[in-house]
Length: 281
Image (cartoon, rainbow, N blue to C red; front, side):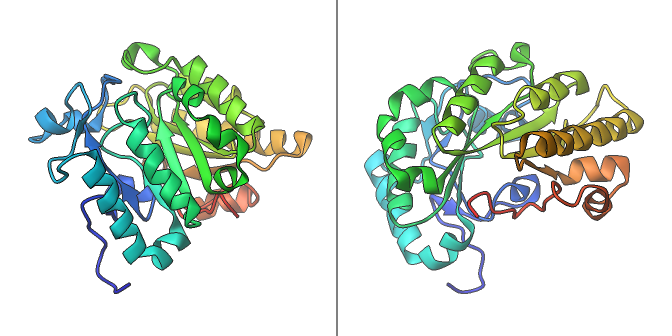
């Protein structure tokens, strides 16, 4: 693979805040029925398309078969490079909606059978009833990490599965041998986010934590206290229960409290990681 950024129809290199989640990502659809009030896809001049209330296939694909074939070609062409970093599903919709999960699962099947790690981030809990084959084959558990966005605010995510159900699904997946992660982003209010972290200790392998864009109902001092309390909470739990959960503080947190990840790592060297932390190691 050359040094030019990968910018295919299905696989591309995200930038900005999305770049803190993955080196390579996959988007098949735009729009989403989770109906989250804070969704960044609803904003700006493209909000009418990106933030549509129903997932629709991207216009660059003729149909779902064309989408999966395009994905397979792009992955095969760049497989050695992508295998190093894995794939992330997805930034422009929810990959495990009833309307999107079939294509997501087809793509993940192809990727994992070619030893490409896949991370799936969702606000759905009902999908795990539809993936029985993933429970029984080690290749899937070895190469799939499943994450849940957890804000603790069901009132702002009216079409999504309740946060409590997402947490139960995470626990079930972790017990089945899958790597799990939580996107504690955006932080709407600190109390709700703290509850999400406490309620997933023991079956969440990685927390990625970021602030709400725009006006916030919390101060930098309150966020600093939240950061300190969270690191102590996870570090103490790891020690007492022999777990190994990690935390990635997104740039939005570091910039808001004027503290670097290096400074945080100096206090808690075993739990603070960078954006490229390998969940599959």
